[in-house]
Length: 618
Image (cartoon, rainbow, N blue to C red; front, side):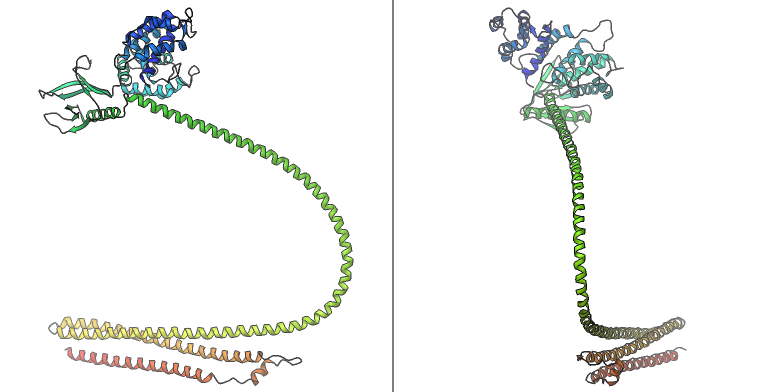
């Protein structure tokens, strides 16, 4: 929002105040006075003849706002130089004109807002209002302004009363005018129970912050540049400069520090009896200052950094930037709301389309029912035709049945021959299955024999480990006998313990032998199963050889008993089987003899060591 837009808002109120008949037009004499006063407060020369020359073709009639705008832009606003005038004077001029007509307070009633506070609220309203005429302020901006005022009064803002106010029929949701806003403030809904002086101070603070572009104000201690002494000054921070005065009335300005992109703020350590110090560095000087506490120092440093950032970004007002951002957020929310409404409309259209398709579907179902009735009629006609055809076919079937009976006699003979062949095939298949089962039993018997042999090997290894442990215990017993001759009593106790351990070892050895004996028995049983399986294989091989001989026509099948009696078992594989069986038996007997010999030698050694130990003990 540029300076021209701000001035036009105030001048619009002055122009509408002169329109007493509310026709949208003002007489030229009143416009002359308004133009002269505007030129005076804007500090530009006034040309009294320009207005008459500009409206020469319409000397008698009044001038509308559209007709006055070209003159206002060309002869007044185009000549305005920013910084050469005080905008507050322009606002006071326009407020004076419009307040006489629109803002009337009852002197006898106890109103909340005095004239000066109403003027400041009017200026705040113009600053936060939308850039379209008639000027209104949207509810979001009203809430923002009221929150700022409540924050300045250190009270909590009550949103419920504001929502009740906006829910009234007289208040449009698109925005409210300044007179409705001032009426709401005068009603005391948001400032109930608060002193008028506090309200005035809060309004002035918010006015200076938003309209006056004051980022922060307050007392700070400042170190002098020449005498280097500390003095308390009232500082006022704006986006372009930092001014300091002797008091908070801001009448005696002691200095002005220009802020630009070359400035920076630094926090200093406490010294010279001052705490919470910081400095503002420019290209030419460094200003040292001290705040009352750490919080104030943080607020001041942050505010100064914000002012420098605004100057670098080319922005002369923080709240103008914030207003634009809030407006963009509102526009985005409005776009999202419109998009949502469009989506809802699209969904409604889809729902209507769906209902229309459902109606069409119902019509299709009705047509389908009618088609189904027609199909049933056609089906009935086809059934009648089918019955006629069936009767004709039955006659043909009876004729075919007679031919089939003659063919069945021939088929019976062929089926008997096929049955004999199937039985022979089944016998062969059963014989093959039995042979496969015998082979599986033989394989299982061999696997069991190998497993028993592995178990016997493990038991033998365990027996050897036990024998080694026994020998180690005996060697340890001899070492203890040689080392502990002086301690006979303790040696006797240790010998008893060793004897018990020896007995336990002997028991374990007996258990191992018993396990080995059981394994040997399992091996014998596995060998017996293997021999039985070999016998079965021979038997089924004989049966297979017999059945593989083809049967000639007219030859009788010999009985099973006669085949067993007349068939001689070939002896080609017997030597090999006998050799493997005798070899496994010899190997088992040899392993048994080795185990028995090793156990006998171990027992003789233990008896000899035990007898030697008994002789050494007195």
